Image (cartoon, rainbow, N blue to C red; front, top):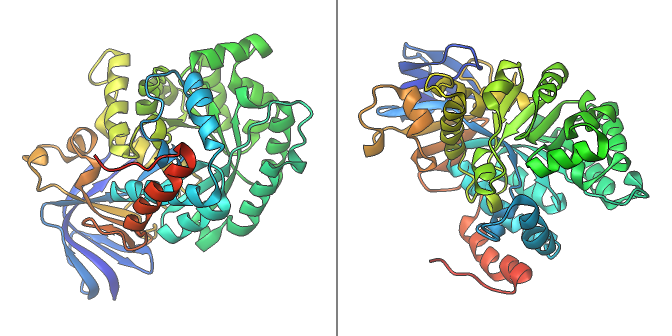
Amino acid sequence: MFDTLFADVAVAVIAPVGGESSVLRNHFVGVRDGRIVYVGAEAPGEQAREKIDGKNKLLMPGVINAHTHISMAAFKGWGDGHDLHTWLNTYIFPYEDKLDARATAICAQLGLAEAIASGTTAIADMYGFYETVAPAVAESGISANLARGVLAFDPSFDYYASRFFKEAKVLIDDWHGYDDGRIIVDMCIHGEYTSGPWVWKPVAEYALEHGLGIHVHISETRSEHEECIGRHGKSPLRVLADHGVLDSRVLAAHCVWADEQDMELMAEKGVSVAHNPVSNLKLASGVAPVSDMLAHGVNVALGTDGAASNNTLDLWEELKTACLLAKNLGGAPDCFTAPQALALAVTNGARAQGRVDETGRIAVGYDADLILIDFDKPHLTPCQNPLSHLAYAVRGGDVILTLVRGRVLYENGTFPTIDVERAKWETAHYALPLIFNAVTHNA
């Protein structure tokens, strides 16, 4: 017996970049024990505990947020109108110092709810306080790569004696591989400009020795990129490569100012890029050369960055923005297509997280990480081309069902795994007073 059977539903087949994406009409998809066990045009003879009518609905793999700081919900709209470095040093770092484990977990729950409701089934997160955030992630049911960030400016810094390594080690010991790999722990370097060889080398060595990935910010701004060249005579990516950082699975966030040599190196080393177009535009950091990266064979995924610099965790905004930017950078409407943008949000994201053989496809044997989209909406009607609508018209609010490994995490405004009202109350009455000495109210 199926746990869930989607009946007479349109099924989006999202191919990797260069592949042939399509939509299969009036199909049936059966789920059992967290996996997809049937896909076909014929109704299966097997019964189901729950049968979902697919009329005017589209079923697709969940979208994957390849770079975020899920616990930054409290900072939405804080420090608007500044470049990245002013924003970080004046409006973020001093106030993040006021966070504690309880506030961070509360804000994580809000961020997770927003992401899940808009169809995100996996995140790659870089932050801290994972002693409380990791349990919140586990309870939410989402898949996640978690990376404890490290910043250290002092050359005498001893990484292995630091709280950063101690917290990362606890995170690895307690959570890496949790729930048959639903949670993966990656190592982390915040960025070249916030650390040095005293961080890069030990992180690279530990990741390589233990088979872990590394999550890092790379060349987000022109000043970051050019100042690194001034210090070291080469780009941030190539500096880190010299210290062994690229010898593991690397997820490099932003890469807005990556140059030709960087792209060649990323392709050679199998580095994945997390493209965050909305955050980059909001901070006026620039536009990543995504089409050039893809032409070099680089795996490019999509991320929202933190809600503080975005202000949402809706990956559909990133998908549309990425597509429009690439077309305009390339100077032609056909130089970047809707299926390519969808690949960034799905299959490329799975590869970036080290999950490409588990998720991102509606095929027998894959995890049932699925979302159902209501196409019976005025802005989605009529529908000449479903793939075009997915890239340009669908919004996070059009998602009516989110499953991770067959488990319902969101359905028509309800969150079976997160107490959203409690999280909202605690954000207003505990987290915000702690950070800003104020209680905020809804508009």
